[in-house]
Length: 533
Image 1 (cartoon, rainbow, N blue to C red):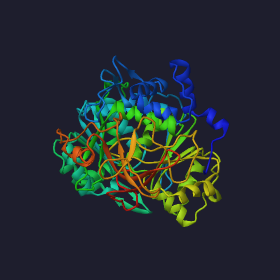
Image 2 (cartoon, rainbow, N blue to C red):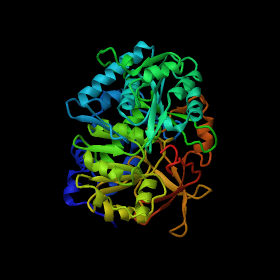
Image 3 (cartoon, rainbow, N blue to C red):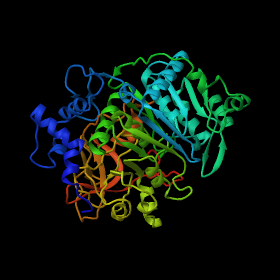
C-alpha cells in the first residue's frame, strides 16, 4: 500500500457526500467500503439517476426509467430526457477564471466565467448565421487553447456535432478524418509552435478546406501573427472568414435542449486497422459519465484548478474541458511536455496553482526513468490529486509519485479508451492506493477473461483480456457513415458476444482491483502516448 486517505480527506470527499446523500434522501446505504461500487453496477438505473440528481444536471429529466434494455446492443438511457452539454458547462457565472491557457512560448490567456459565456454566445451566433444547426458538423484544427473550448461549446449549444484534430497531425491524416463527416464549417489556426519551432499552417488549412466540399465557411484563428487572415487569403482559402468576424455579433445564448442521445462530438478511433473512424458520442452520456469521473473519482469542485496534458484530438482533452461541468477552472497547456525539460508541467502546476493534474501514463514513466524529482523544482503543496491515464502503468512509477511528487496526493491510475467515451478503471479518493492497480470505475462492470471468454484464472502474473459486460451511458451512439454498426461490431463486440472488448490486457488483484497491462493493438503517437488517449 502506497497511500491511505486521512479521516478528514475521506469526510470531505464528494463521493462521501454522495453516499451520505443517498442514505439520507433515498434510503440507500452500504455496510462495506465496496458497497457503492457493487450497487452502481447491480442497480445501474438507480445509480445514474442519482448522479443526475446529486450533480444538479441542468435539463429535463423526463419520465420513465433511466435505463431500458439490459444488453449493450439494446440499451437506451433516459429515453425522454432533454439536455445540452454546453448549458451545463457554462452554469457558473462570475469574474473567477474558467480557463487558464498557457502556450509553450509563455503566452498566457485567462478567460473568466462571464467572458467565456460572452465568447461562446458570440461564436454560437456566428455559427448560426453561417447556417449551422442541430446535426451539422463543425470541424476544427486547433491547438489546446481558449478558442478551441469556445468553439466546442458554441457548437454544442446549437446541437451541432464537434470534431477536432491538433494541427501537428498533418494534412493527409486530418483530411482522412474530416472528409467522411462532411463538415459545414472548418475552423483552423494559421500555425503553431512545437519544441521551439514555428510551423506556418496557413497553406495546409487552405489545402484542407479545398478537400472538404460543402463548406459554408473556413474560419482562420490567429496564433502565429495578426496577419493570419491575410496569409490565409493569399493561400486562396475557400469561403474564408476570420475568428473576429465569427464573434462579431452579440446575442443571448439560446440552448438547444436535445434528446439524451443526440450527437455531441466525434472522437476519432485509434487507427489500428486503417483510417481512423469517426465515433460519435452523445450529449447526455458524456455529461453523466464525465460528471461521475470528475466529481466522484477526481473529487473536483469550484475551488479546483484542473490540468490534463492532452491535445485536442484526444479523449482526455474532452475530459479536461468537462472540468467546467464541476465549476472548476481548467488549465490548458499547448506545447511539448519536455521543453525545455521534463519539469515544465510541474513548474506550470505551481505557477497556476493546479490542484488536480492529469498525465499520460507514459509521461509519468518517462519522468520516473529520468530521475526527476518534481518536488525539488516546484512547490506542489496545492496539488491534491495526480491521475495517470493509459496502460501499462508500473508499480515503480506509482511509487515514484509518492516519493518525488508528494506523499499526500490521491493518486489515480486510470484506463479506458476514446471509443468508449469514459474511463473503465479509476480509483476513488477515499480508497487506499496500491502500486500498479485501481478499481473499476463506478457504474462500469468489467471483467478479465481468457480467449474463450471465461474468467481468467492462473498465476497472479498472468493477464487476460479486459471486457465491459454491461451498458454505460457514454458508449458510442454509432460510427459516422456506418449506420449498420459493422465497424463497432467487428472491433469491439464480435470477439466476446454481448461484451465490449477493450483491447487491453489486465489481471484481477487480491484487493479486488485490476492491474492493466499493455494494449493488444498499440498505436503510438510520436510522443509515446497511445493514439486516442
